[in-house]
Picture 1 (tube, rainbow over the protein chains, first blue to last red):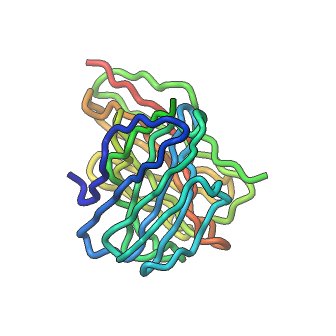
Picture 2 (cartoon, rainbow over the protein chains, first blue to last red; picture 1 turned 120 degrees about the vertical axis):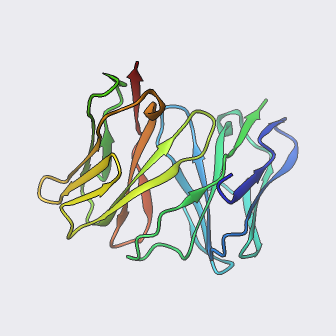
Length: 116
Length: 112
């Protein structure tokens, strides 16, 4: 275990469903991130939260809705997804958001999402 | 446009040899560069960080170099083992935006 826990590990959902991905860390980190990893493509940064405040939305479609109730928990709410949204969704945390400090990220194992 | 390029072809080497992976970037001004290891079905694991004013960094069998003139980082694994087989990702922080951006990774296969 890395200290960042993601649930569920696998999720299959229809295009009309609503589901949520959960991420939890107890490392005392103040920054949390959502990344999307598709086959043969680099990790794509989706959202950044620093001290519970969203500081980055990387032009993500509104069918993805993040929520950060506290510095330890991060959610990604999904609704009316498309098959091309199928990917590995990774949560990560770091002591603070990047800004020249050089923190390595701690990643969870990801949620493998399949949209049918 | 901004690019981070890693060799998309898998690197196959014999156990005991040194593996060298390359990360090239264009149109970035990174404050530092990071290397991660990713195993199938798992998230990336942070390995090493090197800053723009550092030429070389070592950690056990790992060595990273950073040449801001060539816009390149090299990642070396000495005395490689089959357990080193994985995908290795480089990532850099754009000093202007503070974002951590990843390359697509290079898969290393170490054969016994």
